[in-house]
Image 1 (tube, one colour):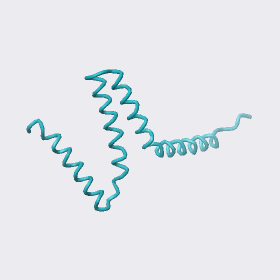
Image 2 (image 1 turned 45 degrees about the vertical axis):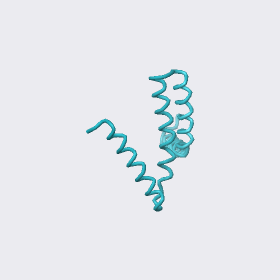
Image 3 (image 1 turned 180 degrees about the vertical axis):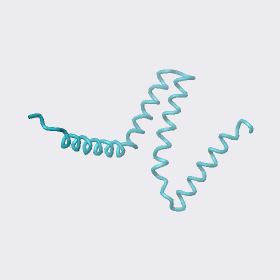
Length: 96
């Protein structure tokens, strides 16, 4: 395998995802996650190769973007945690 084949496969995959999106398959959420993850990876690369401060700033910006995309997941986790805590309080023996 040549050195550029990995990038070519990634580009083909992204192109295929774009075509699937245009055909009506809902991949908007996936694309919404790809961009923040790429920004975080860019920050990691800058941290290792160019400048720690620049990489840190880019990584934090990407992290904030990713948190914005995954915020609905945190709401689900918090709701499930509240339900489990409430059930555990009902099961607890009363201290008399």
